[in-house]
Each structure stands twice: as structure tokens, then as C-alpha cells.
Image (cartoon, rainbow, N blue to C red; front, side, top):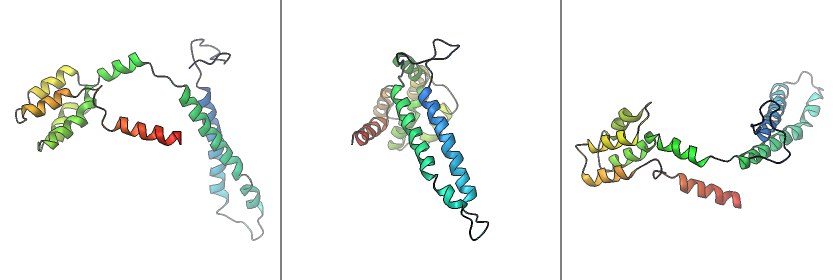
Length: 176
């Protein structure tokens, strides 16, 4: 989202810079550099009285601080992300292969032994349309009409699997 007074790109006036994600990247880079130094330094002691370990250990807070700031920036950035509903809907509608998991589950519950293979042949690496999916369902000879009805009721908009339930759980856990 656009924040009033925030500087965008110096050459692309239409661009909304992902400043929070860029800040997160920078802070994680610094934290990782420190953690890598700890990995190289701390397991090795040159001499019995090597006191450099204590200097290194004093910077643990700095590494963890950069990590905390980074994740706070990621959350801030994610809170600014907005989906463009018409584009998302169009993309979803053009990818009927999404329903393959649900269709396979319905077929397996009807004791169709080749359910996985059939859906794999139909969808793997392919873009499926509503028309081609419905044609495939209607050509299933070994499937009862009630099962075909359930298969035809699937669509990218209606087949959510457990996504809705999982999202609700995540939201509830974040509210605590």
C-alpha cells in the first residue's frame, strides 16, 4: 500500500518500494554474518588463555537484535501487502488443475484404484480449463453419477481443502 510522504523509486514514479522487506533482508544479512562468525570462531580455541571468545560472545545480543528487527520488518511489510482481487480471481479461474487433489480424494473414497494416476496424467505439468476438466469427468466410465456430481461441483473457487480452517487457526493464534 502507498504511504503518504514515503519516497518511492527515484526512476519509477509508479513503484511502491518494498522498503520493509529490504530492511529485513539487510538485518538478516548482518545477523547471519555474525552467526557465521560464531560458528567459525567459537568451536576453536588457539590457546588455553584465548580471551577472544568472550568478546565474540558479547555480540550475541547484536545478532539476535538484528534478527528481531528483521522479522518485525517482515511482519510490517506483509501487513502492507494487498492483493488485487480481480487478478487473483482470474488467475485462479484459469488454473483448474488446482482441483486435482480434491478430485483424486473423491475418486479414492469411491474406491477407484487408479485415481492418482488418472489425475496425474490429466494435470501434471499442464494447464487445465473448466471445459477440459468437465469433459474428463463426464468421460469417467467406471464412476457412479453421484460421484461425477461431486467432481463437477469442484472448482478453483470452491475447493479450498483445509486452507480456510488453517487460516482461521493461524489468525486466532496471532490474536492471543
